[in-house]
Image (cartoon, rainbow, N blue to C red; front, side):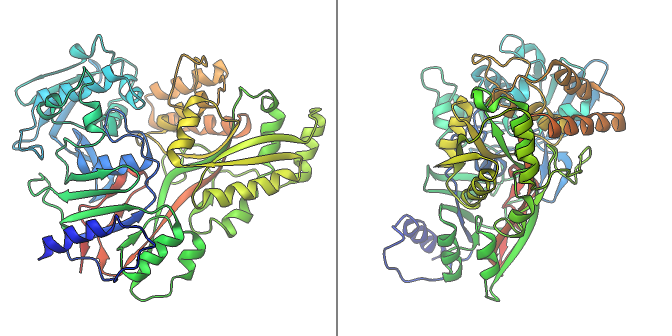
Length: 529
């Protein structure tokens, strides 16, 4: 009967919201989530680079080493049971876990690891840079990653500590795919890319039962998972863009969890059957100016902008409980963070800066923003506060995928967006906010510096790479703090807030884990009483 109820629920979730329905609690063993998932562009591990995509990959795939639901601060064994690093030889040798299998039933082999890393490098899609920074190229990947029996040897080319390399190998593009299954679904030499953007070929705690872009995702528990089968039978993630609709569905019992409610809605919840859990996040939120736009290239504009954000006003109202003031690129609470917040809302100071620089106002700038809470409210706050100094924002709302695609094309003027580290090392964000060695249109880089066409000064580029190779741990962290201070003071990227994520859920739900990044969202331990 439970399977019948689950099938009926999945069908009902696709009906229009306006249609009248008899409401009931969700079935036992099924977690139903209301979430805005329109940021998804891809779910192939070689291509996926969006926040929601990262959540899905974590639950569908494993890596050689990974951060797990039981403790998201510890880098633990994944498909590798153990490993040995040789810093002098720049190699790490992994021993694969005995008996690990993919959801298809195929065994996890060294060949799968080699194929997985190779296809990321050869496809060279958005997240490939995470792996290619190890010196891997389509020409040398066959020599850099080798295997024999149950061992895989990874070589890297660069002055990196082994700890940095392990963090790279714990990132989403390092997910291991079932090479046999993927090859069976290759079309015209795409290495299974089209197929993997609608299906999954992992060994993770869940399998992908259904993915309908912009509608819903259904995950089924993998009973053969090496770390134990999930507690919940299945997870249905329904795309619900409107936060008010998410609240209504939760209060009516149509969903077990609402992922995108506003602070006002969280505060308005008045039910003993609904609880709210808060999870500190690594994502930083920023306002940036495209340096292809002549009116935005004067550093005085950047400096004035830092005094035109109503930081306190927003954190006291529209983003209360969901963001804290933070003005540096590496999040507070992580080793190497720079926590000074020297800027506050001061329109008179901003006007003085603009006047001294001879900048004529008013200046009109289009501002791209994701058309969802709390981003639209934040954009309106910026529109109001910046107008006090003669900078007029024209707000251009769009879906998450539309806004992100425009950002990657460098076709925006100003952008309100967020950034999370690709892996838990300060270099992940330093390379995004303090490095851009080739600003040409042809040299695409998945960084906010390149996407804003900011030609980072050579000295800052050099400092970023020096911090990466520094062997003294504390000195290395100090170097990253200094970089953050420089970016904070002199860049077209105004970092404003650090996210704190609130999730409302039925009181009978427990075990949900939402770590500091989207890669640390786990459903494996969820239970429903």
